[in-house]
Image (cartoon, rainbow, N blue to C red; front, side, top):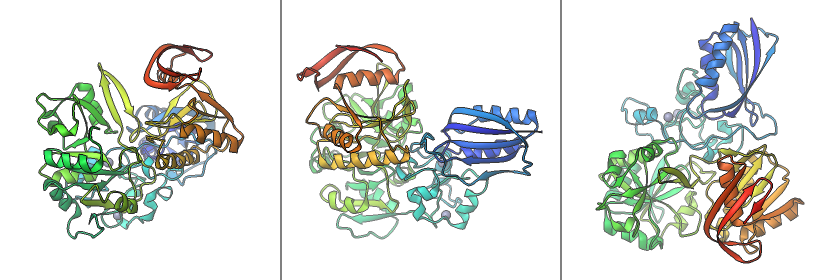
Length: 534
Ligand SMILES: [Zn+2]
Ligand SMILES: [Zn+2]
């Protein structure tokens, strides 16, 4: 008999990794335990026959659940302890490295959709249905380890039924932290904009109101959307008037792929992206003639569309006659998307007629991500829900914060050779957005366990709020402060994303504050990790 201590790093929390380890350990007749190490990965101790252990290690590498990403497996032989079974041990608080990656939010999986519409299922028509492979993650996580107690689901005590599934290693909700049901979980309520609750099935009623041409705020995973029937010209125009966006295109959500094919052209790659677990908005070419109202995306050849990614979306389309909704972030131009119930009543009262809200807190705001294919290549226009907080590797190590520029802002933390890019922040010239940015920076710092920074980086522009914020932080913390030219940053980010050591790039980004204090336009830039030349 042999025994091994195994340490696994990567995306191994909140993705069904421990139950997976439990299952394969049982399949190969091994004993021992698996344990979450908080921010330091997963620890496994196994005992058994050498050949069984080999088969286990093979499965560990090659059969991990869809969202898990095993990055490093370290194995050390040890003296057998004589375990009589294999079990999942309670999480420990772990080290202080903050390297165990927090999973992003994952769209509802096919198994859960099936159960959602199965009348014999306990979670029939229950919008918060989730399992080990799907559901909210980043938006509800307050701290690590990723256990229910560290998420906004801790306010909902599991009922006996959910607990029995949560504790059953053979159940597909084994250790699914946000597991809940109509008895124990969150629920939706429908209100008038004055705050009066409307009695009856809130989701069915909402679908009926949207069919009738009303504009409704709908709270989802990463924030609140404003929804209306996208097939009705007058309704879309009314929404444009109320939301003070005369030109900006509205994102759509369509019931299914066939619906999208009726008004847009989809390539194979775009189809894959639409169906991916991230369910981003994909900018697609409009069909000519475009059968939907021109006011959805005036003067543009493209239209941004996504598929339902949560139980609530599937239920709304189930009850609705319209197969396609406007699904735009609930905010006035330039302000952060509204995510809290009390703010929704205050800030959306002139925008919507009704509000469909649930009682689970959204801790981290995450806008819908936006993808566009340019000549067949995938470009991420907005990297947010479904991506964040997954890191990007870089070839050197320091602990730092880069605050970004002003418009379409996202910041990034660097730690242990990785860059953790934030969710979409927005236009930081607005105080409200800057406030959101401060909160998001504090949260990232907490979950990444970053106490001391080596470096804080801002844009070269002296008047950006982000530059001022970075200077203030650098001064308060006594940290080195560095300003980087805007177009240099763009080229450097392309270098990092594509793992290049050297690059000649063209930055065509309109205006950027130059190193000579002049405004720069488009630049051809040579760059390596040592040098940069314009
Ligand atoms: Zn699921
Ligand atoms: Zn329950």
